[in-house]
Image (tube, rainbow, N blue to C red; front, side):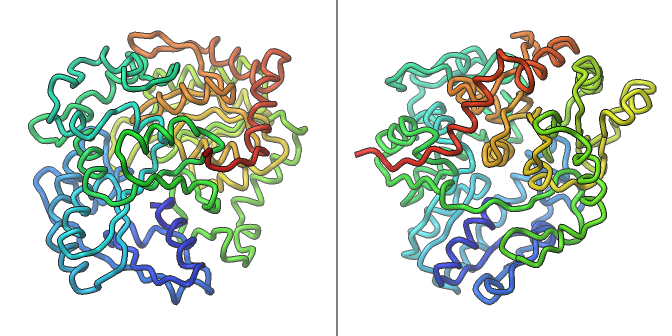
Amino acid sequence: MIPFLQLSKLIAKKGHRISFVSTPRNIDHLPKLPPHLSALITFVKLPLPTVDNLLKNAEAPIDLPYDKVKYLKKAYDQLQQPIAQLLEDATPDWVVFDLINYWVGPIAAKLGVSSAYFSISIAATLCFVGHVPILMEVASGEARAKPKDFTIPPKWVPFESTVAFRLFEIKRIFDDVEGCDENIPVLYHMGAGIDGCDVLAVRSSYEFEPEWLQLLEEMHQKPVIPVLKLMPFCQQPVGKLPPVVVDEDSGDGELDDNEEWKEIKEWLDKHTKGSVVYVAYGSEAKPSQLEVTEIALGLELSELPFFWTLRKQCCSVDTDVVELPDSFEDRMKGRGVVWTSWAPQIKILSHDSVGGVLSHSAWSSVVEAIQFEKPLILLTFLAEQGQNARLLEEKKMAYSIPRDYQNGSFTRDSVAESLRLVVIEDGGKKYRDKVKENHERRGQKPD
């Protein structure tokens, strides 16, 4: 949602009027619009249809356990007629849609409305998954049928690359990739979205992945617009959403007076530059109890100060609450903080004391870390996070904690060693230097 709102504000700044369409709860959780753009952006709430097995009031993946998200997708599929009617009544010049609304392109085309499929995944991911006929299972001879098929770079990538899943990564999401009786494959969503649009917009830049953006355009024979360099960074929280989130456009300084931020800043101010590890796994990824234990004990063994934003439940109905090791917080008092409520991630990342980010490699988190020149230590969990990690590893901007190739298990020792390597040891200087170099680089689309 946030990348779409950022793009909406960017377009509105050019004087264009925007209708931002989503479900009521999703819109209610968005940051407040800055006054100078509020007249140009209209929020349009479409009630989400009820479907069997979908939890009440669930309108976004963050509201659901991972295995229940398929019912959310089914509910969104039932918005085709309301959105078609909205487009017919509003007669917009363009419609920008996302992965879950993959069917918007053909509806827009029938009404004479131009469409853009906006992917918040990087171009490398979109290239890796393949051409439209493969994604939509038309070219069955090219299809990948087993998890191991996704662990090697595909033959249509003409340059050397390590971008692929590790076996444990693809196993965790294979049902979603391939689909099941109750779930349209996510690859079909991607293929239909790309096939039906006029323009493919990607939350990336030519500075970061020029070869992949060029390949993406060649593969689909459609204009590809990288929008990352154009988009502002929003002060988006992690953990529980506060009543109001203020982003950089508002300019009212409200977040600086926030009591939570004052407390966090006071703690960060006590630590030396580049010494603190910031730990965050976003709004959807939830480590298991064993993984939380190993992360915690790894942080302890590292002897580094840390600030950990920990979600103990993936959603309000999650009964599998994770717990920290006995007496962990008592032992870490003064050196580490475990924060289980709202935390202003951008504010934390901008603080000089933060010297590294332990992350799940979701692209939004990666973008924010790079913006503030923070090297990444990665533990992937879901979706395309593994492909993000491979590309970051190639570019020496991140280091992945060593894990078992089959099941993804890792140890507290590997966590501690990885953190120390990237944040303070001489061997990790290449990661610290590279992330600064990438942030400072300025480039243009190659000829």
